[in-house]
Length: 373
Ligand SMILES: *Cc1c(COP(=O)(O)O)cnc(C)c1O
Image (cartoon, rainbow, N blue to C red; front, side, top):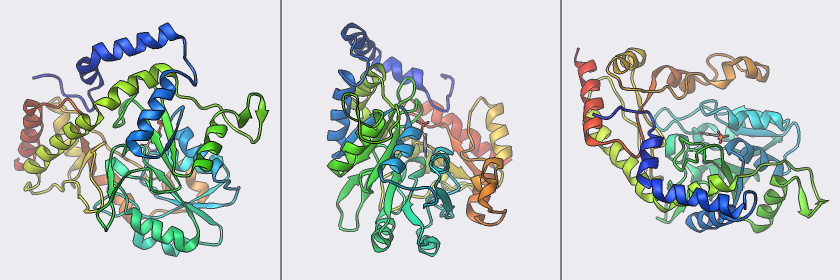
């Protein structure tokens, strides 16, 4: 059996090696390294795939920061997000002088609990930032409804959910990240569409807003050496864009491979006493950036799997409101009981596009063995 990886980036590369190598060589030959060539090609293809405006940038963290900048949020403004996510969602808000206000997550989906949202809105609230954790959308129709009622922006942190469809009550579908005013994405290597380094993108439905974001990403430039606003330098480089352009062609196939691996886990783990498989919702597809189970015996299971050569990860082992850097926000233990509990019971199993049946069988077999001891 091949070694089991949490995420098999090299294995995936080997399946596309010829195309990726050629695309990288093309960039070197063209010397169109920055804001040209493959970057423009890739942006256009991703925009078509998502049916929205796409501005590529340096990484997903920059995408979030530029979203806050583009919407003109001011120091002291409040943004509502969850304490059970990757740090970038919260960190960028603090860097912009904004106040992150946390809402607990739903224990089944790990996403924003929309029932607790409205009570947190104050006159200072400016935006809601749902994170589509592990590849499944938060309840966006509910979030959008509350946002409209209170005149708030919605910024989707779609860094883990590229390719996920949000399914509206009337049956129409739209890609994750393209429903709120702004969507943010990351091409970090292990993400659903991963580069061989850093990369990110901001999405905007509104053309004018897209223009503002494009200007912010380029030092606030309007025309060459004409600055209309304070900006940053955040760019996707052409070599990464070339790789991503190749991978985008196979993206739906890669998503399907993740979903098939998830279906295998579901089938063999759902009946197991002591484990809860990831919950699915009717309003979203799931692209399985992670396949995350819940079990009271998390640490023991993780150690057992490790002894069998099976990697697993805890996303996330800590909530922000109890961490050193975020103590100043004034929260205490017990404020977000669901998130706090999840940090003790979640475990993400190996999930990538190259998992084969033999590996899946081995992972599932050992998990069953652990629970039958
Ligand atoms: C990965 C990730 C980010 C940040 O992306 P980078 O490209 O690593 O900066 C932000 N939010 C979430 C939810 C993520 O998973």
